[in-house]
Image (cartoon, rainbow, N blue to C red; front, side, top):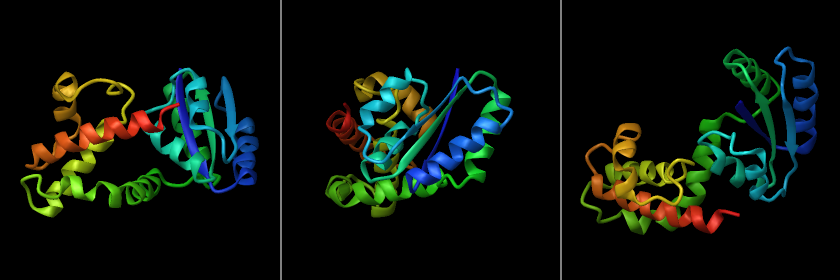
Length: 179
């Protein structure tokens, strides 16, 4: 089963998306609307089907957004669901990620400064490490346990110490924000 989710600025917008999805030809197994203020732990109740952006959905719920989650079986239905969410006003995930990082950045900046690279490279590598730590496959695992996968999925542009620090701080952040 595949999961597609979108973030909406209001419960009304999320409900409009749910109604639109219900009429789309995507054979959805389940369409769930999580209203603003829902505990991010509710995402875990969806059976672990959410993708690597789960931490962003949890953050959006904490900030008062609504999340629409669609469970489908076929890859083609993933594309249909994504297009339907986009058409009904789901926020672009790149924008959501930027807002999340902006909220985290000020508190984390002292940790990547002095990590042995220029500020730009250090921040980029630190951020990539921090985000890599949010992946479901990384949760609760040390950096050395996931090093090969982390290197393959998130090249860090010449600042490995900043990436490692970001990963370790990201793990700690994830534990604090887990339900």
